[in-house]
Amino acid sequence: MLELGRPWWELMVRAGAVYFALLLMVRISGKHTIGQFTPFDLLVVMLLSESVSSSLSGGDDSLTGGLILAATLIGLNLAVAYATARSVWMEGLIQGRPVLIGRDGKIFRDKLLANHLSTADIEQALREADCEMKDMRCAFLEPDGKISILKAAA
Image (cartoon, rainbow, N blue to C red; front, top):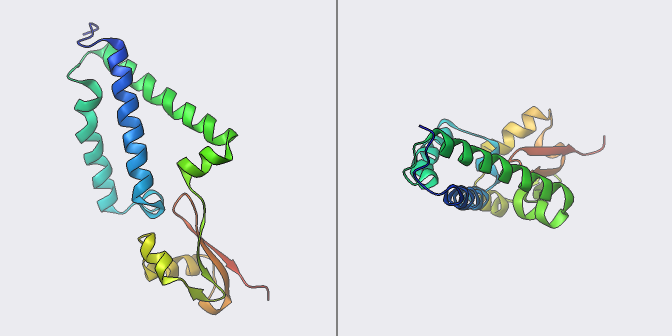
């Protein structure tokens, strides 16, 4: 139960490799994927966790191995949070920057397509901001996947 089936350092290397590979894949998949989970997105996350579980452990099913993996993943997450909080460059690399997707009542279709957004997403954000399209000054896709609407001055 406590005896490791793999060297402790191999578990840490595996955890790091999987963590950064998944971080890269999620980052590439776009802001919309991160911010607004649909049932399909939840399914993908569940399947991702299952698909990488053996990559993490390398067949080690010990309690000690699981705790080393968990501590490594939490440590990596803290290190990334620390780095992004202290470096604007790292923050942009890891979290991304807001994207202007509309201005002065006009939506930029090319930006919607590039960020996997539909007009329904924009319409929902406008309703949530209690703003009509003609009254929209700017619309941004935030790094967390949410859409922010700024109203024109009355």
